[in-house]
Length: 140
Ligand SMILES: Nc1ncnc2c1ncn2[C@@H]1O[C@H](COP(=O)(O)OP(=O)(O)OP(=O)(O)O)[C@@H](O)[C@H]1O
Ligand SMILES: [Mg+2]
Image (cartoon, rainbow, N blue to C red; front, side, top):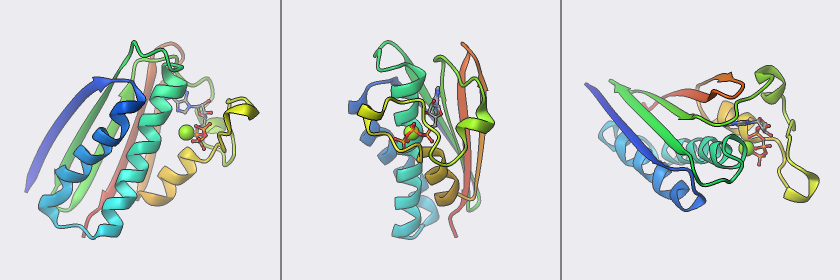
């Protein structure tokens, strides 16, 4: 079966749990294990948090778009912002790389978590033009 959905919402921390629950609910028709659902929720959370904190620098004036597609048992989810963008994506994907101040207690592991919890991770970004994270996962 093929199924698509999209969701656009304000880039505020209050919407993070809502966003991850929507993606999880979208996958239910594939009857995934609880473990897979939790992996997806965690990965979506990390991506959405990045849009809010890094993309829009907590300015609360931006929007986040999530698009998800199910092709049989394959989930593809893209999470995009129109924020500041990433100057060097390869560097940003490095384990423990963070541009946050030490006082913010960010570990620089968000992308690492997305990569390990999902089957694939792709990051496209343009300075000043925003960032799009695409992840896939087999649900069966
Ligand atoms: N949507 C985004 N817009 C702009 N920059 C981003 C975005 N997502 C990630 N980045 C950049 O990539 C870096 C690495 O992101 P990653 O999620 O791996 O770590 P972190 O967010 O700094 O820390 P953690 O996720 O462990 O709390 C960030 O510090 C930031 O500089
Ligand atoms: Mg992060």
